[in-house]
Amino acid sequence: MSVTEDLSLLALLANASIPVKAILALLFMVSLASWWVIFRKAFIIADCRHRTEAFERAFWGGAALEVLHQSVVAAQESAGSLERIFSAGQKEFTKLHRQTKVVTSAVMDGTRRAMRATCQRELDYLEQYIAFLATVGGVSPYVGLLGTVWGIMNAFRGLANVQQATLAHVAPGIAEALIATAIGLFAAIPAVVAFNYFSREVDRLATHFDTFMEEYSNILQRQGGVPQA
Image (cartoon, rainbow, N blue to C red; front, top):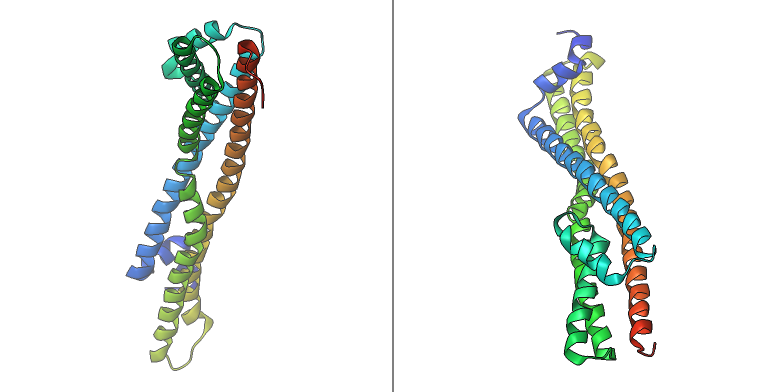
């Protein structure tokens, strides 16, 4: 086999040792999984951001809170994160208000707790699988490096039976080894970029949720005559 043929990508993969092939297969599967997570989270977060902005426009558009709540309940299955947070707060506020007949600090505390619990569930959903991207970004280069080290070891072991080593003897083994590092970086780089982007977007949404909950609580306090702290 000529040097050119040995250094073709398909030939290098076909002639790789079994441990290197196993490492490459693992990295390929991890890369596919990370891309699935990336596309899925990109759609979920973009949809959440769109629904959040749309609901904020409706909320500050002057609609009655009870009417807005009924519209959210009617479309519960397709409601966004901020809509579910609002619905949980409005539902708890209405229930506690009917029990006490007045808006007290205890009513407001219960309303805030209901919104906080729902908010945490929504954030947990948005953050789902993001940690997997961090793991892929941190581990994949080392897994690829393991394949590289193994391939280089095999390349130099193959020189033991050669009286005069030339580039033709060493190049295929070294190139095969470096493919593992390249695949490891190919899996790691998109995962790290996506992890940083999604983490920043979830933090921004969490800030939106916190701001809304505070503003909504203030509206209920003013309507109920509860002194603000």
